[in-house]
Length: 112
Length: 112
Image (cartoon, rainbow over all chains, first blue to last red; front, side):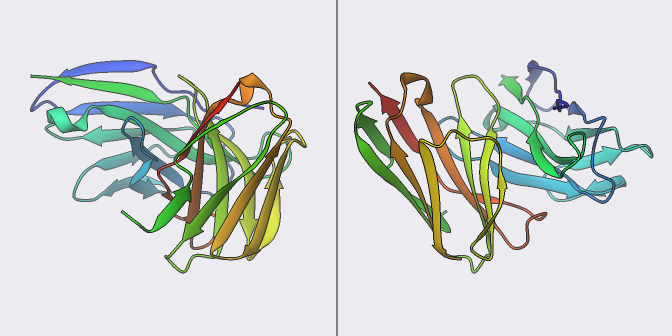
């Protein structure tokens, strides 16, 4: 089963922009790319979802290239409370059937 | 958030015990999911139910048995578990199977 891969961890300072990339080479043709945030001992929480090009909401932007084999979550001006694990979620067709695949997760640590 | 609730929040069981995890969603969604999250691992999708019908089973051992009596409730029946089954079990729901998922707080399961 193809993996959906992300950097294991990232450090940033307050006020900086953070970009986290997810690689999903076998994304299903008609599927969305979704990103979630997870704090310790809590379930993941939805951040943003997109299909192609660029999507922006009040907390983040999502950049998706034309081939859709990767996506980049952009968090503008992070704060200490953005310290969390970030996951991408895509539908994968590499096994011949549709399956949800969460990324390996990126542990973001925001420093003062 | 109380949209998706899970009980119990913590469970310790022996390998010969039988227990059940319960999930309830108050969001009017038609799809529900069980995930397993082991320490320092990404989320693993176990089961998907859409309109009470199981649509995805990711090769989960038969010692895990899901039940979905209606679109608002989801159970995970556990029997003869192994210590490696110790993990955080998360329930989620969504409107349609490709839209934003709302997660519960999870059940922290320890198998002795």
